[in-house]
Length: 613
Image (cartoon, rainbow, N blue to C red; front, side, top):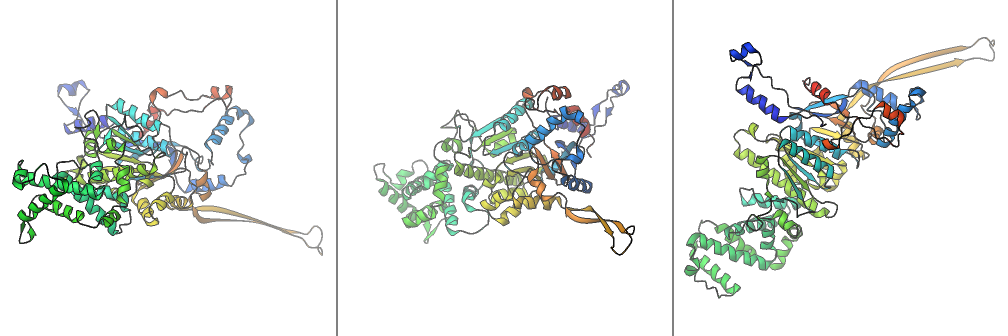
């Protein structure tokens, strides 16, 4: 049994029927008259959790439950129910935390409109509290809504990966897996396939070391100019500017001389033809130093007018190459000091075939890129192998994020009607590793390009540590949906409380007074009882309960204004589903030998989804 999600295939069929005037009628008379029935297009919603919408009454009850005794003797159930309650006590113990927030109302299926998610979603929570389970649910939901799904996962979660793979098989969509730790079975990802200007690709590469504060580091800017020149020189020399080729082109001053020589050869081939060496009078027997001097000499003698270079194809690239090779060698290594370690990590084995493969040298490899993914559909699951090589995982996540941002930008330039472009959902786990200016720009402008981001991290302090407090505030402000599981970090708790807000809670104060005097009769005494009821403004959820949220439970503040507390379902492959636990099972089996299960009623969820307004 599969959990119900919105079915994009059925939705598109309804849309096509509506455009054709309606569906064929099932009534005999209407069939003869060829009348069609009106088609009502349902809202594009998907199931999120079992929970309830939070209100002031729930805050009132939560504070009351939170003030109960530690042994809960005020709400003890009859002894005869012990064979059943013992299982729930065991389940509560396994999930941990305090159930005060989640037991104050009856849980019902909660649905979310698709448009909400294009406001982007931030997910926080401690390790092992259910963030990945929630992302598995959301990514499957987006896939069933017809979205193209891209997952950036530093941990290579097997269940998440296999769940999406099975969903793709059932829907007939392609599933592609990029695995930095297993190159033999991995697809290759060409990050340099899609760009318009050379500066687009160089900015994509430099985003890894540029930071998020927008500061102008002169060495970084000079290094970016060098990368742009290398890209132009490689293209002029007839070589594709992959990450590895760019690294080899500028790895050392000597390599830059070779790159300049190849660029000059390409320049002459373009302007003089295939027999350019006869015109320039370059012999194959010349040494490298003599050849490059001969090439430079002919260039200066024939392509300058009044000491100014002519406006010709490749002229700027060649002149930039001359500028860099004529500079001081020690200065060259200074400007490339921060660039080279990153390029080396992304060019050495196995990154060379994973990021810089081409169809000619690797005809058997499946090479994907963002443009092809955005048009072909399906799922690209990117496993970064972050535990064994965190530096490369960080570089990869930022590079891929920048590539996706560039492809999103191209949608604005090429698509006349953005409402018809394929919808894309991007899931970034441990998102603090992927933060750069391109990610921030994608959060700010991705909605119109029909891109929904789901970024996950453990605490807001992770963003602060990786970037700055201001950048962390920008990230949280750009996400209209916020979901949090259990959190113990103070900054993250403050964010939850800010999102949930405050409410008025009733307070009852009862005063008892008695008095008696020694000079009065023993029968004379005074007594009074007073009761005072008032309201006070408090946090809608007690802060201490945020660190006691049970596993697989969360608090959500959605773009549509709803505040939801809910219990997330666990999505599992259909072949792994087992039957729900019955009362008979609980009575006859020890809590330590029985795992509690309750499968969601698909028909019930389906019927209730039609009522979502």
